[in-house]
Image (cartoon, rainbow, N blue to C red):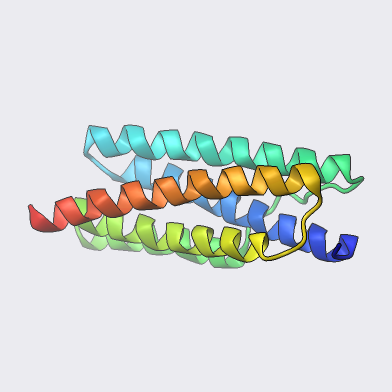
Length: 150
């Protein structure tokens, strides 16, 4: 089993990715004009918030707390969504491309986390969340592909 320090670092990284995703989806929901995307992005923002709570609960059970900040990388990502949507007049395809890019980071973070030797319940939580993130990524990618064809 990995040291507690490595496990905590892994969980903190996942929490940061989820915080970034929640904020990114909130920003995208505000910026997009299409009602279907607005609703989907809100749903994914809520999903990420619940994933954060679940991961923080796992940390708490291990006697650790999470700080409430999100990563600098995520802040830059959200700024890029704002810039893209401003430059493209809220273009559906470009917003979906940017959301997919954010999901790429999340998928990779979960894949990396699953390479670690995580203790029991935490491993199950991370595996389930990975499936949820992967599903969201694939859904966004499908919507992006459809928007490209339109």
